[in-house]
Length: 297
Image 1: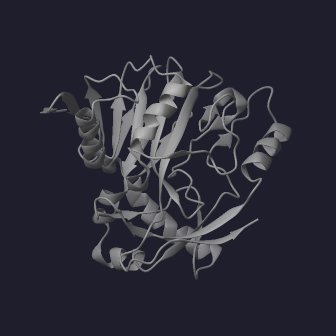
Image 2: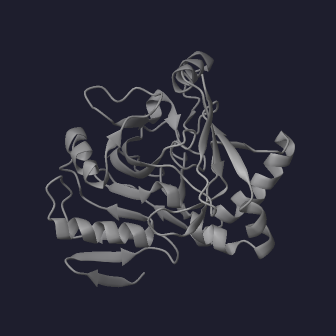
């Protein structure tokens, strides 16, 4: 790892293609504008950034800080955590484990720009999260695959949930069905380009992940094969960074530049993380054609 000093903050690069740890700041909604600009610059450069020892944050102050990045909004189908305005809680004891590669909430046309995740209750061992850089994944593709990917559109839907229910001793099919009924209370299907152009950086990124069910114009089996080829580049270890959580940690990522995977290797130990998503962006392909809603029911 190499250390660099960017103005007032210490930024430590954590992997070759993605990820940095930032020290020297206490996150809040009244950050000095110059400090916030440094954070935003680091986010653009490293796609996901991490902060230790932010134990002063609670639900309200997490929401307030997140607002600096854009307008927060609640999950389209899952109710927010009680006594909050926007927080989506993943509690392993309630069965939620996001152990699937995904970009947050891609089943709607307006995809969150950023996610702010706070570690609330973390297992002593296990429960790391891995992020991957979807731009370097695109750049790794052979030229012929780049040309193919740029022509393709994927259908994203929430008819299956990346936050899969774990089979806890007191949880079963009934609880599983209840959770799915909430997540799928409104079913969305959205058409996204497989390669989108990032609105801030202008870089090309693969846009797939757990909500991408099939490719437009292809059968289910054909789609699975093609998606698996592209997704294999996304999940190459060279494109990833892994974060070992502690309580009070905060991770912020550029949702449209990454995918992530929460490793479910902690058995029945409770793990609670809370997320705020902010900003909305409708992806476009290189011809500036936007994503679009197919149906909502």
